[in-house]
Amino acid sequence: MENNNYYTIYGINIKSDIELPELVKVSSENPNYDVTIKLGITPKSITNPLKIGVRYQAKKNELLLFVDNIANYYIVDGNLIVIEKLNNSTDSELRLFLLGSAFGALLFQRKIVPFHASSVKINNKATVISGVSGAGKSTIIANLINKGYTLIADDISPINISDNNFFILPGFPRVKLWLHSIELLSMSNNFEKIRPQLEKYSVIVDNFYNEKCIVDNIFIIKTKNYSKVTIKEIKGIEKFKNLTANIYRKQFTVPLNVEKEQFDIISKLSTKVRLYVIERPTSGNSIDEVSEKIISASNAII
View 1 (cartoon, helix red, strand yellow):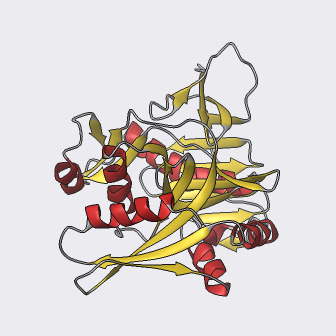
View 2 (cartoon, helix red, strand yellow):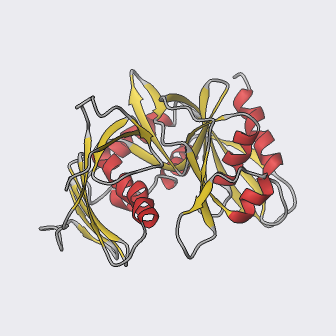
């Protein structure tokens, strides 16, 4: 029996067979939706794939993702995701990879560049915070939210261009945090585990901006083995290289045949925004100091 659930994420209206409690609901009376999510049987393989990775196959407008013991996801034409649930996977695990890698592929198919980054609204514009896993970007975002700033997106911040302006498209009102970060920041008790074997949680955020927001600054967080926090503005070709390096699931770009769109968007973006690298110590608690440097740079008038 088909269940219709209607949501919005990244400016995309969705009709889904499964409930997605993380997302913002929209009225079922509006029949206009851009993407359909279905439970079903996925193909075992893609015909003539351009790339066969360890856990995916892909070619233009098609990507088949395999997540061991969780599900297979088939993403097609930027408007359909078919999910084949495996074994005894939990609903939260199913949604974790749907809203992660599967949606990353969907965004590429829709000619939108997803950054591996979180975003908040500061000074009425989007401040984007990127970095490798473990760099502390979600903890920094949560700290900024605690200081009164508004969440736009966590972990994936899609960038779209319109009228020569670049916008972050809004995600959903949650951030993913490790338990020690929740305790460090004294976050609310309104959270749930994302996987049974991990002490990582999806934390509900009240302060959420569900509109596209012009990008102002991008910060890349790195850790170094020394005692102070430093900030440096990046310019020239290094700006382009740093932006490209922080694209979410960038290994999908070649087989999905979206390299040109990605290159064009990043090239134009690099002329429009300020980019900073913040290096923080690997040990100790520098989250508040990093947050203050981000606030100061975001509020600076150039």
